[in-house]
Image 1 (cartoon, rainbow, N blue to C red):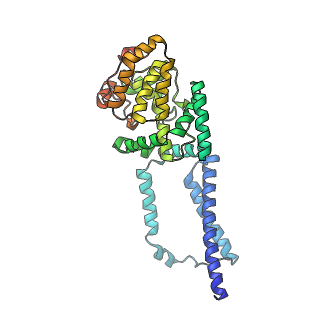
Image 2: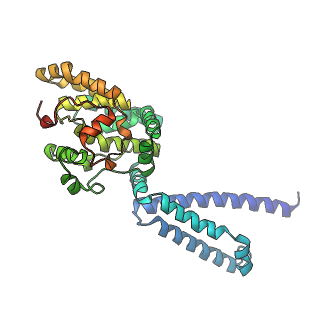
Image 3: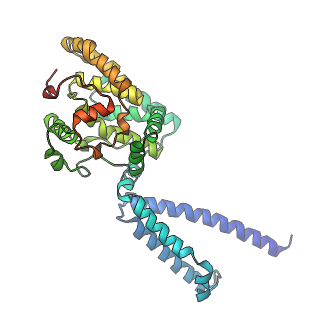
Length: 339
C-alpha cells in the first residue's frame, strides 16, 4: 500500500477520533456550564460555541493547519434553503414547545441524578428498607427506597399517563408544583369547595409546604424520574381531594389508593406496615370503613397521576369526584377532624 494512501487512512481515522472526542467534551462542557454553574441561557451558550468554532477554524486556516474554501457569495446559493429551514424549525420549536416549563425539571434532575451500579443499588435498597422499618419518619430513606425499587411501577405509570391526552400533556410539559410555580394567593381567593381552595386550605391547616418534596436522584431514566417527581409533588393533592387528613389513619388510607393505582412497592409497604401503628380505635375505623373505601377507590377511580391538577383549580370538588368516579368517605365539613 502506498505511503500516501496510508496517510489518508490515518488522517481519516484521526479525524473521526478527534470528532468523537470533541463531541464528548462539548457534551461535558455543556452539562457542566448549564447545570453546575447554572448558566442562564442554553441559546447564548450555543451561540458562543458557534463563534468559538468560527474563530478556531479561521485561526487554524491562517496557520495553514487546515484548508477549506473561502466564504463566497456562491456558498450561500449552494446551501440554500438550509438557513430558512433552520430559522423556521427554531420558530416552530419555540411556538409549540414550552422550554421554560419542560426544561426546568430536566435541569434540576441533571443536577441531582446519581448513577448506581447493580451492587450499589442492591446495598442502598437493603439499607433504606431496614432504616425505613426501624424509623418510619425517615422520609429520605422512604424516598430512596421508592426510587430503587420502583422502576417497573414507574414504567406502568408512564404508560397509563400516555394513554390519555391529559397525561400526555403532563409528560410533555413536565409541570412542577411548588411555591414558585403555583400562585397560592390565587388559590386562597378561589370559592369554597373548589379543588384549588381545598388544596390551599389543606396545606394551611396541616402546615405542609409543596417545597418539602425531595428531588429524585436514583431513577436513571429521565421520563421515569419525572413520573416519580410528579407523584411526590401531587401526594398532598391526593390527600386534599380525597378529604383525608395527615393522621396515620389518613396516610395509610391514601397509601392503599396509591398502591393500587401506581403499583409502587413503597406505597404497598406503607399501607401494610403503617396499619400496625394505628391505635385500637383507629384500627377499628380502619378495618370497618377506611380500608374497604380505600380499596374500592383505588380500583374504581380514574388514574390520579394522569390528572393535570393545575388546569382544574377552579373545578368544584363535587364535579371532580363525579368525573373521576370518587365517592368521598367523609363529608367536607369534617375534612380535618383528627380521627
